[in-house]
Image (cartoon, rainbow, N blue to C red; front, side, top):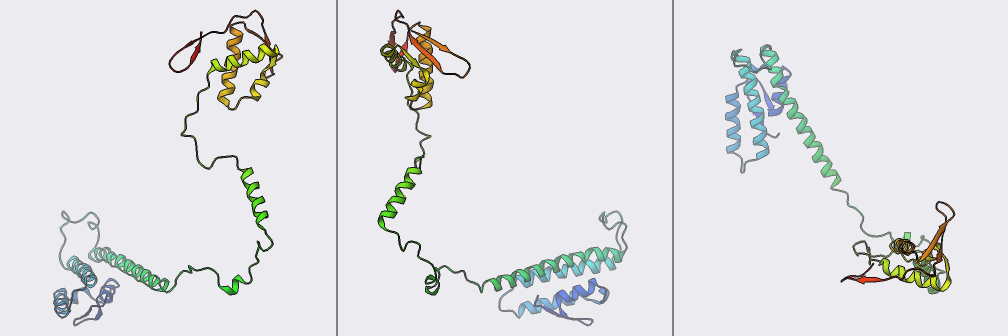
Length: 261
């Protein structure tokens, strides 16, 4: 705080005056707050433009001085006193009030430290360019002996390892697999071969939904007594055999797809 105060008992920076009062090195009764206010107003009149930082500091310190002096000079009404001052002596009450000075000094010191850091760090500038030529000369050229054919071979190997598409396709609805179509296909295959294993059917299934449709189709053929199925045990392969005298497989059509009837 750049404002200085001159009174009969003290001369110096205003915040130092309040510091001395809080340390009891200056008698609060000997300080004329009115004289300090008059000096500050004269100081403001002589300024070309008002410094808001100095003005806010002055209001804070002057109000604290006034409250300290009032608590020391005026008797306090126990009924109207704050709960924190009811059992305090005038000196103790003053000590509570000057805690505002401590908070004031802490924030002021923190602001000064931040300003110093800001000024110090402002001298540093990040490096946006690449390494200098003297460093590039020391960097080994890893592609010095690499030919276009080598790059092509590496690209083919990299693309061969990529199994997922670059564009996500989860938002695309999967094409439904009709159980009827699977039943017709399996019926034709068994009619030609007379015997099949379910693993052979799964080998030609392009997706999980197609595998499920194939399983349901086999169950439908078994239900219509067109095939005979057998399984040696749980999770073992299913054997499918043709029944020559089985019922014919008929469909009724609707708007979207055929349904087994």
